[in-house]
Image (cartoon, rainbow, N blue to C red; front, side, top):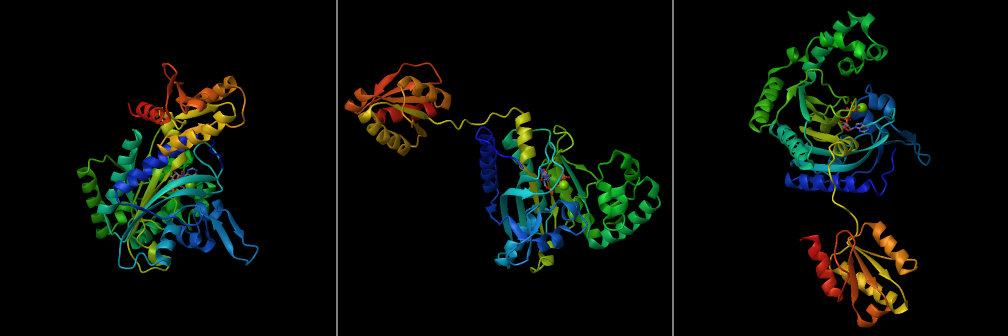
Length: 413
Ligand code: ATP
Ligand code: MG
């Protein structure tokens, strides 16, 4: 779990601001769920035999009432729970998003943390495939807004429950025929969650996975049509993609379309965004059944990619640092600082006294673009001295409104 320090925060804020603006353009509204839920919600939705539920959840018993609670490992289940609980799906479709921390007890490494952050986007009550494509178009447009290139869209279809059942039986038979080549994880999942075997990252498993039967052969007509229409819409939107038949996703609630956005620039943790359709989940959590789909992106991985691409982030330094010395100067300084702030400027008022020289050092170190200097002379005449700190220019004496105007002007030359 990481601290985000003040020097790193501007990159986070830049990302969050960009994401909010982008979500608004597509008509998605913010929903904020609690970080804790009853454990049962995740077990039922994500699935008993998944990595997340088997070994990654922070689960504990509430000492006060014996209830089992879990720090959310993802947002979809909580989001769907909230939408049902507040009756927002009753006869209406909803487009929503959330941002915030998720918790999974994983082995920490680059791009994989125990508290990480997601931006999640959900469209509830839509059968697709138009809305599935909307989500992929959104991904592509966010990468462009962030100045990220080289992200690859990989798509697959898991079909519906019936075709997955047929495929499951064929896959189990195949894997049983190759028991000797399976690693421990694969053997453990053979009967409980055989599809996840396809998602193994163990190189020793590559060959046996490559020649495994394909789910595509078990799809029924509806799933096939949904997937074909989706591809047509993607082409029409000019979004490049590849079909990856091994893409299965680690959560049980998905059906039909699943996808990931991947990069080769982050080593092993190359998936920055992932999603798919979950038509059964709303009914399963207790709502009136309705189709839905969504995706979530890993903020830390996207920030790493931004860092890697040398993205420059707008400075968060103050516009002005206010230096003051002497009793009347200090009294005047408070008013000047508030007046400048009232004009929309970010102003740091020096606190703690000290000589002009030491205060000017602070002003410089703060990164502020201007020093506003007030001594007893300025205070007596109700003016300030304004000194540019980041570019050449003379120190000038101005009244406060003129100083505000000059700083503002240099903000938007
Ligand atoms: P992975 O295969 O990398 O474990 P996942 O399939 O478990 O990913 P999802 O549940 O689909 O991940 O979460 C969506 C996105 O959230 C991922 O694509 C990734 O960018 C990010 N993410 C997931 N787990 C972590 C983590 N432990 N640390 C940082 N980011 C993560
Ligand atoms: Mg995972």
